[in-house]
Length: 292
Image (tube, rainbow, N blue to C red; front, side, top):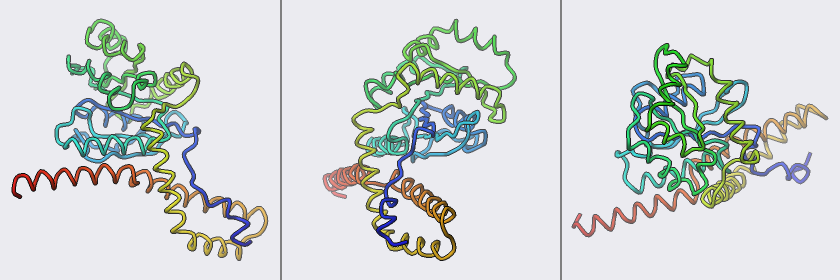
């Protein structure tokens, strides 16, 4: 096997639509992190987490479907500068590029405030004018409450109804206890119906296109840096395997390397570095003006 015969394999490996990409968004407090735990079926975030300073992605399984769950800072988070918040919103998009299949807005059913009703408008501002077409409201409860009682609460609370109506009437109630997976299948079905209503396509926008383009460029750079290492690995595999076994091993190796490179490119690329550089420049200018 020479390097030329497998050169077509050395290319970036973007996520496929066999992976359900979910962007979880919170206005304030721990609700979005409780939802992520619930979707993944494990405690990825401890109960005392109310905010994060860097966007992140976790992989798991929802009712038998492979899922990638992305979290960013709460939309009303006050512990981040404007520049940092802008950067992390970009990172959210890179982590869920080329676009999420679902945007899930999480709230605590017992703590819906008049301010929360404005969250859909902020979603449009952060993610684009058509973002609500792929958005569902997720309402968290705690304990062993009767589901009918919770549904009655939803139907009679004006703030909750207003919030849900802005998202096409789509909502789902989930238990904060991540061990309770009894409603996983129902959530997945609701996401599937929402996707069907928009032609089965993931969400995209101009900024998501920028995110995917920047991630792809970064992947190509990283792949080029690892070209020698990759070819050496292929040669080692060639010594050990033949025929179908060799092809399987090469594909497995390339998939592993491609996934690793994709993850690095999503977390750090030119589009993100531009935001950080602008923020640093503004900080230096402010410091100079203050005589620092």
